[in-house]
Image (tube, rainbow, N blue to C red):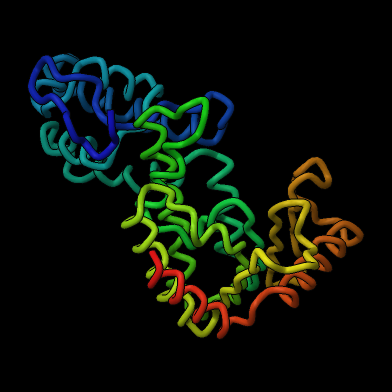
Length: 292
C-alpha cells in the first residue's frame, strides 16, 4: 500500500495503514520509534481505551496501532495528529513527529543526507541515470519502480520521499558549490515515459540556472573519457575534510584517506574538462528537450 494513503480503508476494521517498517539494524531508529510507541500506549491506557477502540476512533486498523505501540512501525505524521486529538494529549503526541522525522528514511540515506547538508562543495559524475539531487519526484519513482527484485509500493514511496527531502540542499543559504557531470544517455533515456523525461529536462534547465550549480554533459561521441569505471562523487566540508566514492574502486565504499581521495578528485577533474562546458551543456539539454 502506498504511503500517500491512496486506497486506505477507514473505520474499526481498517487495514494496516501507511507507514514504514522499522529496520532492525538501524539502532537509532529502533530506539526513537520504540520510545514514541511507548508514549502512545501510555496515553491510550491512561484514557482507558483498548488498541482496537483507538484504531476505530482515529480511522486506522488495530493491527497498526499495536505495531506502532510495539515499536515495529514508523507512523505517518497524520496518525500522530489523530491520536493526539482523540486522546486529548494537547499536542504532546503530535510533537513527536519531529523526533520521527529524523528516522523515517533508511539509515544509509539519512547518513548521505547528513553529509550533503554539511558539505560546502559537491562534485559528481553520473553514468546510468541522473544524480539523485537532480531528479524530479516522477523520475525517481519510475527509477525505483524498475529495480529488481522489485520494491514494494511502500518501499518505493519511502525512497522517493527520502530522495526529494535531500533536495533541500538547493535551499541552503549560502548554498554549497554543486557540480554535476551527466552522460548524454541519461538525458535521452525515457525512464517513466516521454512526459516524465520532458519534465525532468525542464528541471535540469531550472537548476542549472542557479549560481552555485554547474551541470555538464558528457557527449557519447567523446574519444577520451576518464569515467569509464562508473559513477563517482566527492563531498568537501568546511573544516577541510572530504569524503569520496568511486564505483568499483575501494570496495565501492566512501573513502576519506587523502591518497584515495586524490584518485577520485583527479578523475572528477578530468571528466569535467572532457565534458561540455556548463553553458554548452544547458544549450544541449534544451536541444534534447526540443527533440523529446
